[in-house]
Image 1 (tube, rainbow, N blue to C red):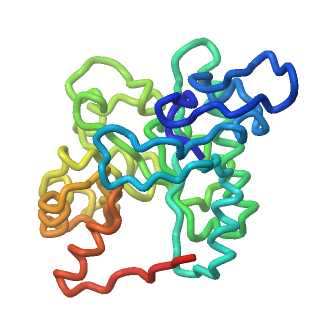
Image 2: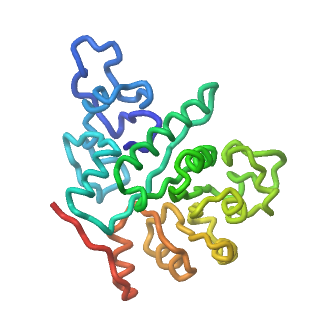
Length: 257
């Protein structure tokens, strides 16, 4: 479970090789795909507070978790109302891009299905080819189409987009929702700054929930809720909980150690 393509040294520090004489050591700043799980497990990913995040709590000695361990954590807490939003983070550039996408997608889908919580899971991706493959191998899994706005979608640009699995968004009137509905996706997750009332209405008219990312400021959380989004992706769930409470809405249960 890691956001970046590499084990970024500003976030994770080397401790020791996975075995004596490991030629791959040190591992920080290596690509995730080039390291074994044992090598990744040696990295300390809580060794410092990142610049610009004064609220971040340091957790020295923190290790990378696997997706299976995240699902096990949900089971350990008997958190039956917790749903999981899992992203395939794909780098499609280079000759091995399609192969890497397929391998990652199949591995992630396999973990979701093995968890027994597929009915409480969403698989989302900025690589719509990953979503298309998931629809083939796990047709019942809920899919979320991520988007970074009109330029990323290729609105008004000639030809098909590699981001969208090879479709041309202009064949769908430049509409994120219309394209997602036509491809059989279940949720649209646009960059929050690109969300408009017209986009929400378009998606809702097609039966698609709108779940924007990544909404961190209280003013943005409030305005998007007022516009009628169906969910919110945020780095600050505590801020979102405060907004929900202020609006008289029920907040999810809190699970503490």
